[in-house]
Image 1 (cartoon, rainbow, N blue to C red):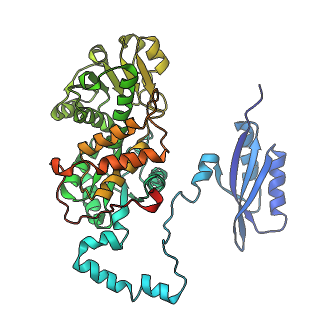
Image 2: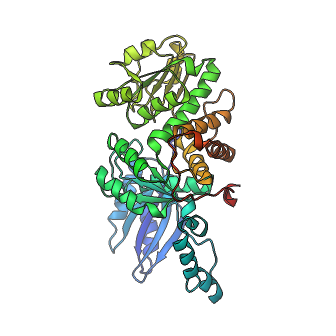
Image 3: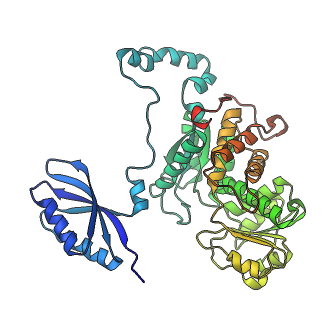
Length: 458
């Protein structure tokens, strides 16, 4: 079998001395590297920085090549060794750009001094007009303390910045919303809440992201009480929305009545508890859960669910099983009952492989590869911003889940996450929720509305 070649891009600082580039390429060639693209990144008086793409046959050869470059004398320095994914993140994925060209003194006077003073006076007299004359009405803060980044855990807010940039890019592309990453150098709930409150005037929504349990519950609950703009923790409610839509689709395929079924949730962290609450909001009468944390089980009971003390017991009495534990192979094949619907959603390895669950008698089984939060949060925020809602309620989240399920093709679990029509339908469903019938929605102090979708979203 032929070796799978490895392609890497080296960002190298090369001395600005004649022959230096040739010296570097010779060393790479002698180490077995096949040089592809050479791109000049920066030219300075003493050094030139270049990206050099090389192909090698295996990891050992790559290590030997890198060591050979490190041994070069004269000031050569490797800054990064990137694969295709890392290359796509170089320089970040987002930027702030002006919507308006400033090419003349007349332009300058309109957008800055002296003309801007008139706009400031208008907003001073009528603060709600900030939603018309500034970007505030279409801007959401993406806030993290870096304590629960993807499946990586507490790696810190700076290491989580690529995730926040990704959220921001998706907000822009899928919903025409400005998403601004906010990295917090604190894990203290009081400081998080106070900081977000202090900066909230510049935003029309707050998306909490990758904040660990249990302090994520306190942070979200307090911010929802103390702010009059929409607040949502995506790891809780974004995950719950997409999971509910997946369960609706799975039940359609399996011929199961979701509202009459008993739903069992394995894992009651931020996502698991939110999924339980979402099922109850949808109308499921029997929701049970289990977790190694007694505090989490008590929290579920306080929300109106029931807890059991083992996975085996949960599997015995559940028609639908949802698992979000992050533990591969946790569900044993012999625990699966005939006719169950099983969604083992942990990535990259599920609690039980779908093939195993089906062999054991499940009527429908799937893992979490296609259950992506991106199906939810862009359209949810587009809808609440369009409508001028200042809280995101379970009624809105259920409407979003139903919209996603309605866009799902028969046999599929969820639709394609980059299907623009899905995000438009989610936004429309959320916007059309009757806020007057939902006690959770407060009368906005400053109602920043955008009834007509942005051009980029149309």
